[in-house]
Image (cartoon, rainbow, N blue to C red):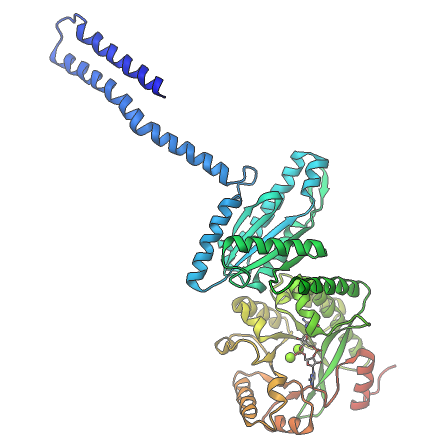
Length: 504
Ligand code: C2E
Ligand code: MG
Ligand code: MG
């Protein structure tokens, strides 16, 4: 650089001397002015070049180099240092707004092998496919408007990362599932069909860590756990790893149970208090065999690990099939199925129900969909849209465990429901605790004002049933009438009670 400056300076001085000592002919005033201008320009132009243009060019080149350094040259996604910086910024914002941030790490297993066995060109195409699929989920997602604000990064060792502001655990597991579905789709690279099976690990701010570095570390350890246990996804569980190992063990047993058809639906009757007739039954899942657990134990784990989608599809098909089979044998009742939040927000939610009814040629009005108030309240707008769509097709909607979840009474008026189920925790003591009685009376009144019918759960004594009837509750369900029974026992119980003569 100094040499260039020296050459330019020497050249300029030589030109000036040349012009000073050159025996010039008589020139006009204008010609002198032009000559002066030229001389001045020769002096100013290099000075301008070195003082303004060169530094700006250098800055642009530095920025481009920096950009290349901070972004992945293949996918254009931020590398680890920039991603961490962006994460730090989001955590800062979340701390200010008292909101949460989800970090999802995605490991598209086997990319190293593809690079090794099929060459770097194919490997790079796979990496690009993964990057584009993840970005597409985040960009096009109809589920969460705020997903548009998410940031995708490519960290070391072919691990991708998604930073989703405002996404809690339920939301992040839905995003993870969508990403897995998008990435795991078989795709063609130069005539070769590639199948990627990716694993995701999740950590949430502020539940699992308070700074970017720890959040990445914890999401990474969740990812490691998921891979180790052969699971699709795991959310970080900071309590103790033995708990996670237990979860992993339960999931693999549950998988085995699904494959070996060890899951069964039991049915608990719903009694109409006005007619004393069986108006319907709630389908409750049971895990049979020595290893079986109660739904309260395994449903949350299935929800966290994505297995619930598979379970819900099975439950819906089985309940619809059983409802039709009973209809054919003269038992015309409504069957209620329980749906987890994750399934409610699943893109195939509506088709799952309409498809099952189409196949069995069952009237949708014979199926009630029980959603918990909490799950409907996680993303109210979407829940309302999904439930309204289902209801418009003729399905009945019931708000389960009412009063135990969120107290979002303001949303109650927008939820398109037909029925409200009073949680058993209020019902059990209405005859002995006057506060429970007032609460139940109030909720029944509220439900009726909203044109919803009421079902009380956990009715175990005649006194409770009588009081509920006096309070205007339409239906009851509980051990007083029957515990949940397998399909054959339920049919027997039903026929004995109703005196229905079956065809068989
Ligand atoms: P839930 O939907 O509120 O179901 C009512 C629970 O209360 C059932 O427990 C039932 O057996 C129990 N119950 C019924 N009557 C009485 C009674 O008189 N006294 C007492 N103490 N309990 C009574 P279960 O079958 O263990 O199910 C627990 C929860 O697991 C269900 O609560 C539901 O949230 C979930 N669940 C069950 N089956 C499914 C399913 O197929 N899919 C999904 N997503 N969740 C399910
Ligand atoms: Mg229920
Ligand atoms: Mg309930």
